[in-house]
Image (cartoon, rainbow, N blue to C red; front, side, top):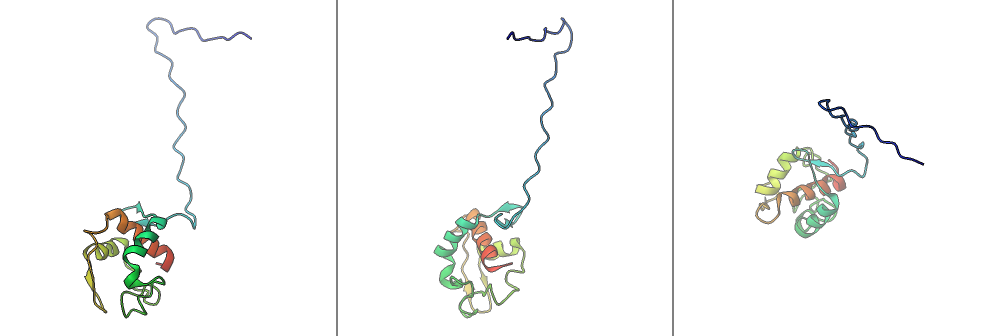
Length: 130
């Protein structure tokens, strides 16, 4: 079979325009597996957050998120006010530390990167609610 090609435009005529690009595809709908959005629209990675929580948070907040019933650290399970705070508020608390009902949580901003803190918060929200 012979290929046919379009003749070049006459001298001085405008060049043909390429076909229009397809419009942007809208983002996929959120699902139960979508990591939570954390502060400023940045998404924390729940899987990475699990490792950060295990290495840095679990000693006080415990594997079950209860902080030994709130006697050692914030209880994310029974005290619903803890995770009712905004992501920005919680990220400030994680980064700067705070004095709470049962003692002092140290600041983590010198130890954990901003992304590590967002990942940990994503894990906390996904695992313990909020």
